[in-house]
Image (cartoon, rainbow, N blue to C red; front, top):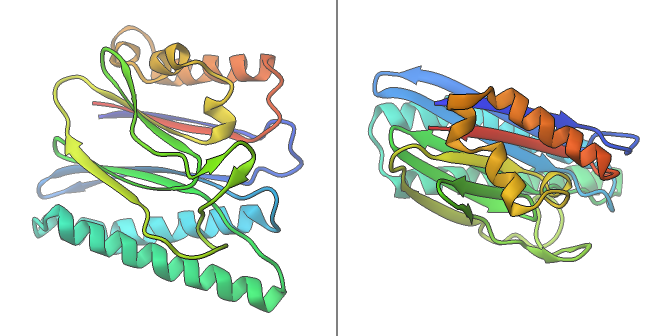
Length: 230
């Protein structure tokens, strides 16, 4: 499984995106986790919120997920574990906000890959794509236009979207923030994480070219993306 990432600040004064790419070898094979967290720009300290959620995901990856994989836990147990972690993270961000008398929040889209299976958990308006012969959007958008209905840290807690499935043959996945996908067509998204990128050119080059395309289209928001090709 090959991976690559892009993390661009755009025209913003601060990059409020956080990005994760982690891999670990276990007794049952390689486990990979990728994620993007997009701090809510209309609230305070978006970079604090996204960074904290990213940090908690990394802790969960090594302390919870890897032991569960080695014990062959099923997807129901994996789901309960990550939901619990995100709920506790949501509560801690709200406590932090109360102490500082601010509201802060972040989206989170995380995927992890175990053997020939993928698992997805999502809150907000970032996206995850699966790419084979055509592009499939795996995530729902928790918002409309400039308005975001759900996030971690601000607002009422609701269970995140959860999805899992089998990976058949050569497949690409892309996890990215709205600052990335809103400037690209589905056809351009398909190129970024196409299995052909792994075979015909470098994945880093594909993402870099997409980043340059976004800049030419006057990117204002932060843009983050992680590609994974099986």
